[in-house]
Each structure stands twice: as structure tokens, then as C-alpha cells.
Length: 418
Image (cartoon, rainbow, N blue to C red; front, side, top):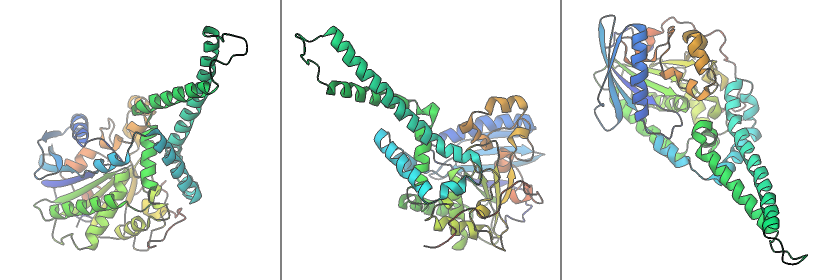
């Protein structure tokens, strides 16, 4: 199976599970096209993209020639952006209510304090929308109050009372102007969130915490459908079925794959089954009290011989729990644990100094660097992994885990059943 295979891959089926992303999946194809061409040119191989994949899913075909070997990969996006769009609303009031509820969940359960013992980056990322939204609200109130007082003063000058002591302009007019200005400013901030990401990140964390770590029913149904799609691919004429889970998509992939193996949908003589988790944020969910299913799936998947699981993060990615073993820190490591192999994409080494300086403070862009080209690549190449001639297990056979990884249990909640 995938953990021991050294098969040279001629055909591969790749399933990509995005993170919390409300945008349509076509942008992933364009990112793959652009960055894949750049990586192929840098690393000296050929990579060509072709049309869509068979079936109803959204995807494309990638063809590589590496060391004389031609490999064709069918890459399909497992879409849940419609669920994200439904949870991603424009209401300012509802966003602030979600902020209060989400902050209370992480604080009252003790999850926030435990997460702070891991990496500072994702905790700062979690606090960022709270700080930004609170700052926007305070600024809107202050400027609204100033505008209200100024409006009343101007009216007193340009429309004075007819006789001394008359109150032509009622006192509530100041409050009305203050509210109108404050609301207008809050809308201005919201409409420019494409550069600030405060609303986006707030909705992301609120969605994760909405059921205290349990999957919402609509998402659970979608994960079942993902499992059926992957199970069908495992019956196909390919040498490897590779599942890639990025950001929030990593813990979704854990549950999909664990259930796939549990129900016996991985054929003994079928393709190698591989799982690549990138920029994972598993602790944001697994540290919550009702994440029983995810913790159970982490424990189960970490022991299975049917799969190869490689977990790649980077300390330069401030939105991921870099080098935090998602099984270990969630308190699910057992004596039979074999996965995941945790190592760093080492942004500061695999990107040239000039490229690193250009990207260093673009935190959201760095969270997607795993899907992009590296101008000083080491042993991580997303395009060779997804479209090259070696299985994931063969590519990283014998590779040591990063010595600085965190493996010890940190989560307060470790139960795998209610």
C-alpha cells in the first residue's frame, strides 16, 4: 500500500480539499498553472496542463516529464465553498455577535490558553480579527461622536435660534448623526476587507467553533460525499490516489480518510493511498470539547498501514500550527502510532533571500506558499508530488521528521466519544 510502495507512477488521481474559502475553485487551477510553470522552469522538468477531468467535479489534468518518465495526473477539487459562502455573511451586527461568541468559546473552554502553548503565529492570527474588529468599532464610535458634536455646533452657528433660549435642534440629532457616521465607517471597513481579512478570519474561526468542535450536519454530509468520490477513484486504473488537505481542509481530509479505511473501501491490491496535509490548523478544532469525532479519526488514521500521511508546515507560515504533530498535540498518540511524518517546508531556506523579503509580511499569501513555486527548492515540490513519477511514500521513505516538532499532548480535551 501507500506506506511502502516504490511504484513509478504513470497515472495518479489527486483530490484537493481547500480550507475555509468562499471563492470558486477555478482560482486553484490558475494558481497551479502559473506556479507549476514557474517551478518546472526552475527545477528543469516539463509540466503541461490540459482540460477538465471526467465526471461532475471541477478539475484539470497535469502531465509531467521528469527524468524521462511521463506521468499524467487528474486533479480534482472537492468543493465545499458553497457551505463556506452560506456561513460567510455581510451583516456587521452578526459578525460582531459571532466574534463575541467565538471568543467566549475559546476562552471559557480553556482552548485558547492551550493553543498559546503551541505556536504564537496562529494564536496571533486568531486574535487578529478580534483586535481589528474591536479597533474598527472603537474608531467608528469615536469619529461618530465627534461628527455628532460637530454637526450640532455647525447647526447652531448657521441656523441659530430665533430668540434666546429657543432649542431649535433637538439633542437626539447629535446621536443620530453619530450613529449614521459610525455605521458608514463600519461599512467602509467591511467593504475593504479583501485587504484586511478581519471579517474573513472571524468567519473562519466562528465556523470552526460553531459546534464546539463537532462538524455541522451540512459539512458532515459533504464529507460523506467526498469519501464516496475517493472510494470510486481507488477502484480505478491508477498507481496512486493522493488526497491533499490544505489549512482547514487538512482536518476534513483526516475524517474522510479515516472513515474510508474503517468501512473497508481501500482495496488491498489497489492504488497507493496517500495523504498530504499542508499548513494544517487541526488544533483549532481538536482542542474544543465536542471534537470527539476528529480526535477519534486522528487516533485511528495515525496507526493505519493502508496509508502514507505526510504533514508539511513551515514556521514562516503564521496561520498554521507549524511542526505541531496534530495527533500528538491533540492527545491521540498511541503505541501503534506511525503517522504523520512531520517536517518543515523551510520557507527561509527554500525561498531566496530576495523572495523571502518580498513575502515575509504577506501572511495570507505565505499560507498558500505550499501550493506555489520555490526558487531554492529542497525536498518539497508540490508539483512533483502531485504530478511526478513517485508515490508520496516512495518520495519520503527514510526521511527523518523535523527535530523541532512538538509531539507531546497539549489539549485539555482528549476524549474520542461524548
